[in-house]
Image 1: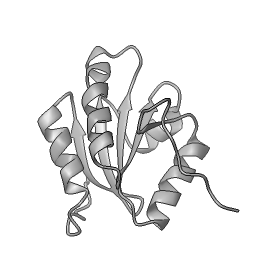
Image 2: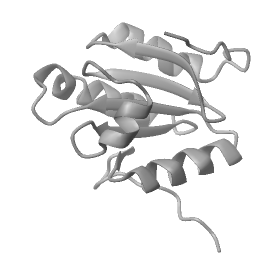
Image 3: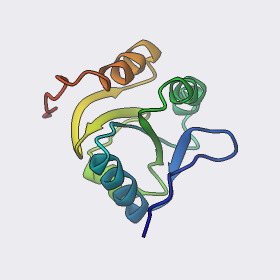
Image 4: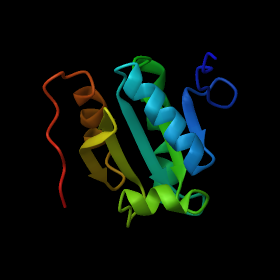
Length: 129
């Protein structure tokens, strides 16, 4: 059985994660393909999180080798808890199902650095809080 390529809504390259099962499916598939994941944890009521959507989408359009996921912390609480998300927005760079970088807050420059680091084969430091 072939797993279908995850797709965003409309022309979006950002995939909205609807459940813990979908999160597992997308991150497992990306890991199996050697593809990095950049995940945006936000909330529909969080203005700063919403303000990052355009830049996140722009980065997704220009980095097709990366899987961009959006997780609404209210809709998929189990994944948000697992990753210790306490503030929105929070961005993670995940390689082989391990978090290698984390950015908290609406900082477009740091988010871009996080995405740029996805191409670095040596970027494997594990983030520990």
